[in-house]
Length: 215
Image 1: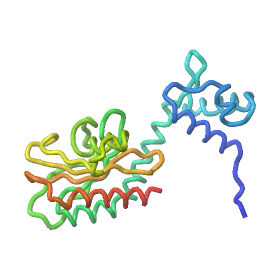
Image 2: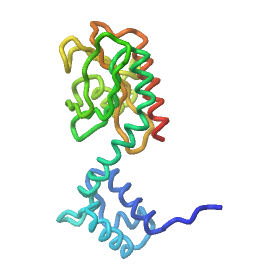
Image 3: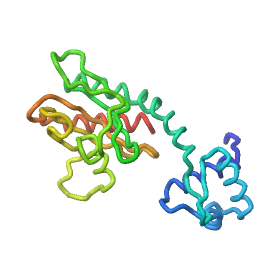
Image 4: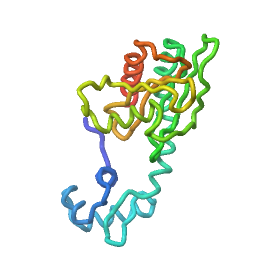
C-alpha cells in the first residue's frame, strides 16, 4: 500500500528544487507550467515559502531560493558527518594519514569531518572547520573536477597536490558522486614528498563508500 502523502507539501518541495536548479530564478508562470498547476496555486505556495524565508521574489517578480535554506543547510552537516565517519576511520587507519570529508561552502572548501590515524608516530593536524579556496588543495580541486566531468580522457578520478595548503604536506582527494544536494570530496593529507601509488585508488573507494551511505 502506498503511504499517504501531502500534495501541498510535495508541490512546495518541488518549487524549492526547481528554484535551486536555476541561477536566474523563475516566474510564477514558469513555475505554473513546470508544476502543471494554475497560477493561483503557485502564488499560495510562494507566499507560504516566503513566510519561512525559504523563497524570495526580486523586483522583477522572479522567485529565487531564500536565505532561510542556509539555516536548514547547516543542520545537514552533522548528518553527513555521521554517515561518513566509518569510511573515514577505515581510510585513516589503512593509509596512516589524516582523512577528511570536505563540503562546498560558497567559494570555499569546508572540512566537516576529520579522522586522524591511531597508530602513526606523527601525522598532519587537520581540524573540522578548516576552510580554504576551492582552487587550492586536493579537496577543493577534486570538487571542481566533478563540475566538469570527462574534461580530459586522462582524468584518474582523484586529485593529488603537494604543498598547496601547508609546506611539506601533500594531499589526495576524490569527489563525492551521485549524491543529490551534496557537493564534496573525501581525501587524506600526509607529510610526505610523494603520495604512495595506492592512495589515489583508496580515496576513490572511500568516496564511493561515503556516497553510498548518503544515498
